Length: 274
Image: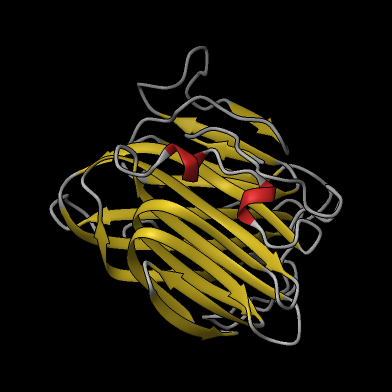
């Protein structure tokens, strides 16, 4: 998976790489655009999340669980936010449990044990954003294997579309995860990259054009570079103007994660919609 301004990270392949998490649309939180236009879903939108201060590890991913399968780990310190696309799951944060059904969201801090179980009769599909304390989260959580994480190693699909490291100020903040489907030839309107913002590609190939003074090494202002699955680009400085387009013949699926701490200027709405 491509992560702009971040790095590549994948726990396990999903089925085949050809399927690559092409989402089922129409959008969840808006009216679908006409055929041939960009469609955008806001999957996770938490106005006030308890964000850990200092160095953090940021993950955005998708998990599919067969009925009765549980994902569980210990030693997580931070905040996790969820959107259940399909099925019914029970989420456990340090002994606090919440049943979340398809179309519902939930967000809460976690300090210790973490778990997600499919308690329904059908496949469950969960979108998750983790903002973890990089110092206090145990290495056992970070280095967990499939065998230790899942109750049935054959009953899951698990992948991260975004992985990043950053440093956050103390306090609350907003967490927003969007998913965009771009048909061939479509482009997202140019926007200035925010300080805590990352883009991941789950399917297709993206053309990225940057405008600014402090660009990655040997990347000229106005130059477009294209990236596909399993490719990365160098970190992109905040304030750089970015234009992203579908540079391939198949639909492009983009994930955009934005975190806006309360004591940092700006808001989660400052990035324009496509």
